[in-house]
Amino acid sequence: MSEKFDVDAPTLSRYVMANTKDTELVILLNSLATSFKLIASAVGRAGVAQLYGLAGEVNSTGDDQKKLDVMSNDMMINALVNSGVCSVLVSEENEEPIIVPADKAGKFCVAFDPLDGSSNIDCN
Image 1 (cartoon, one colour):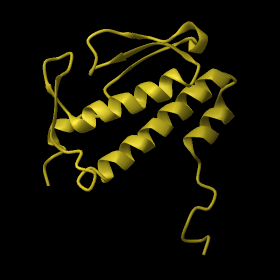
Image 2 (image 1 turned 135 degrees about the vertical axis):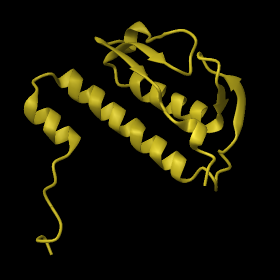
Image 3 (image 1 turned 180 degrees about the vertical axis):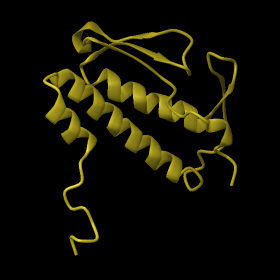
């Protein structure tokens, strides 16, 4: 059985922990990985959960935001703010940078587009 499957596959967490002494970087990457999994799950269930379509808002670049854009942005922001290792977050979906409260702030500044290519998401 194990000949067909790699039962000891390297993971992002294991790789980073083995190759850095920066525990805050490990926390940041694990928080990002968690938000990626949450976003992937939401995209996979978008039709059933009626998450397709516009949210009625416009992002910082003037694009109409989709429901999945807004949800993905919230998921990413929540994961990063609560990681305790970020001080500033910059999202394509927000006009202004997000300053993390001092009691949760860390040393990293993260810029992101939580769901790049979302204009294609309603296509089947």
